[in-house]
Amino acid sequence: MHKILTIGEILVEIVATERGDGFRQATPLIGPFPSGAPAIFIDQAGKLGQPCAIISRVGGDDFGTVNLERLKGDGVDISGIEVDPLATTGSAFVRYRPDGSRAFVFNIRDSACGKITLDSRATRLASECGHIHVMGSSLYAPSVVESILEAIRIVKAGAGTVSFDPNLRPEILESPGMREALLTVLAETDVFLPSGEELFLFTEARTESEAVAELLATGIKAVVVKRGAEGASYFDASTSLTLPSFSVEEIDPTGAGDCFGATFVTFWLNGAYPREALEFATASGARAVMHFGPMEGASTRAELELFLTEQKA
Image (cartoon, rainbow, N blue to C red; front, side, top):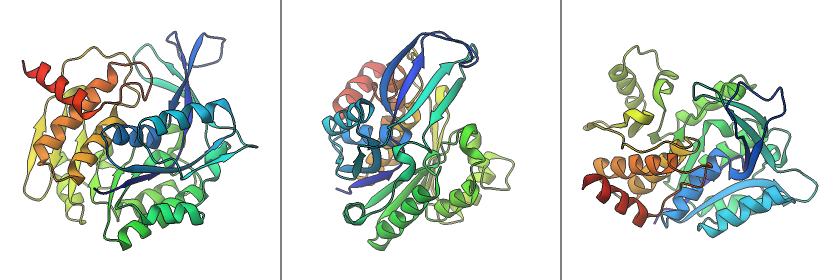
């Protein structure tokens, strides 16, 4: 089995219990929940029994411990996570607005994971992996970008593959060098996993079909468009298919796209047909929104199979 690698932020998420426009007044909070887009992705891969690892940094604090215990418990190789006793684990304070959108206050760039580097141990780990998944949200600091690009070179040198989820937040979109880093990663991408309008970020196209054609013409093998409650679509040179979402009660959408992506990539790497991979990924995203907390809804394969059976009954 291909071992999946990801590199980037590990943090805790602390969530306001009342909806509002931000954090300019005191508000009740709950957490900490283990989080960080690449951490959620790799945790879901681990729960599916897929060999996987993450390269990151946490502080020698309770927030770091919360994440290390969750990832290890769900089957993730955490040997690439450096624990810095003098640093602080990253954090994200989240508040849902009345319209369902989210307001964030991040501490990532100045936290432990803001100084990720590819040391000799991490380089060896990267050489063991046959696939690397990149989150656009992880391209937040020069050392992290450099580490991700070097890991891509290592994986590709071993005939491995790359998946890429833009996963862009307005808070980081204007970071210095962000667009250049995104384009560099895209040029190495085999599976592209945009959400909605992210499909048009790197093309001149005005329609979805034109955007997909333009992306596939660059050498990308598959484009998977996440549409949230509207389902998801898969495109490659010979296949085009769309599946609807599942009707579930949404409790918390945070992390659903990461669970979707991890499930799709895991099935794709293991030779699943596009429809099967997309169906399981859509089920994974649906189960994720049914639980409060970004990693709380990660699913085992058995849980996904039971969910699909119940949905078809």
